[in-house]
Every structure is written in structure tokens, then in C-alpha cells.
Image (cartoon, rainbow, N blue to C red; front, side, top):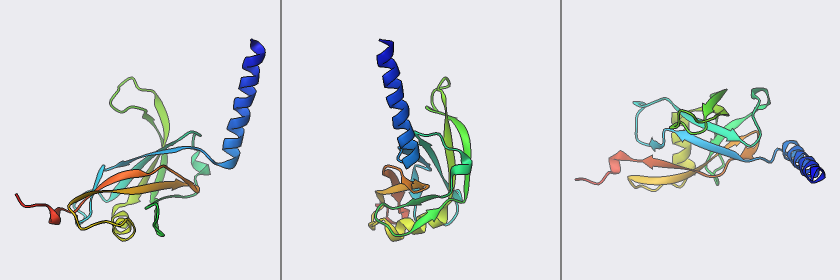
Length: 156
């Protein structure tokens, strides 16, 4: 039985080595705020924050580029600020384990302009757009961000 576990451990370590060497690993993203007002004139926060976790733990020295873009767009917004933080896996659970997270700040105005230009935004009050966050050329899965245009809100 020990031989089987040893073989399994060797195979797992080899697979992790391949993943690390090729840079192919899963990236999960959560973006705050959860909705973006496209008509707001800097009355809100000046930044958009992305919390990035990955299968491989980030080392800040290894992070060269972080950007956000629309999946089919040609323009991306580079991060203004990047740091590593240990954050709860489930923020609502006080006993949740901590996970190493890349905390990234993007200029809000630049993201709004990119969303308007690149994400096929319709002239409707409330809709969802797809965004991807890229860390060192590794893309996250699509993140759905709610975008609002209050000036187009239906009248009551």
C-alpha cells in the first residue's frame, strides 16, 4: 500500500512541476465594487479593486503585469497598485482559513472608458459585461460585472 501512495505523490509532484513551469494555472477573481456606474462623475471611489487567487501562490516579485480587459477587446487597463494580503477564504465566516491573495487596484475612470469602448455596452439602464483579469499573461475565467447607466433608468 505504501508503494501506491508513494507513486501517487511522485505523480502529483511532477504534475505540479509541469503546471508551475508552464504557467498554466487557474486564476479566480472577485471585483469590488460589484456594479459599476458608467455615468458617475468621480463621486464614488477612484479605484476598482480586484482580489486574485490562484492555484499557485503568488510571490509579489514574480508579478510583472496585471491588467483587466474585455475578452474580445484590444485595449486593457494596467494595475495602479498591487500587494499581497492574507484574506479569509469566506469573508462571512469568522473561522474561515486565510488564503494568499493578490490585491490589485485599477483606475476607475480608465476601466469605465475601456468598458464603454470595448465591451459592447448597450444603451440600457442595467446590464452585465464580461471582464478578464490577466496576471503575467495568464487569464482568469470570465468575471461578470454589472454596469449601470442611471440616466437611462425607467421612470416611475
